[in-house]
Amino acid sequence: MIIAERKPLDAILGMMAPYHKVLVVGCGTCASVCLAGGAREVAVLGSLVRMTRQTNEDPIEVAETTVHRQCDREFLLPLAAEVEAADAVFSMG
Image (cartoon, rainbow, N blue to C red):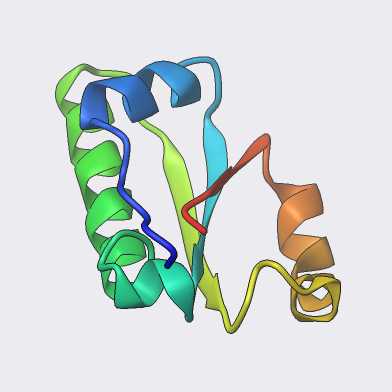
């Protein structure tokens, strides 16, 4: 059995603190089924991060995407350009 759980928002914000352009990547299988990292959760996290950083006068650009399976390299290859454009990648898979 696979169990996924999102880290607390404060921990995520701490990890993203030094960056100004972040790509948040979700997974459409295990993390999605656990309601911890699918497309819906990626969108929610992106909004929370943007709102919090804006409120703290430290804006951030957050790109959001979800792949079918993060555990298979073939599904990640199409993200190469988005990864290169970001300062950091935050995986929710």
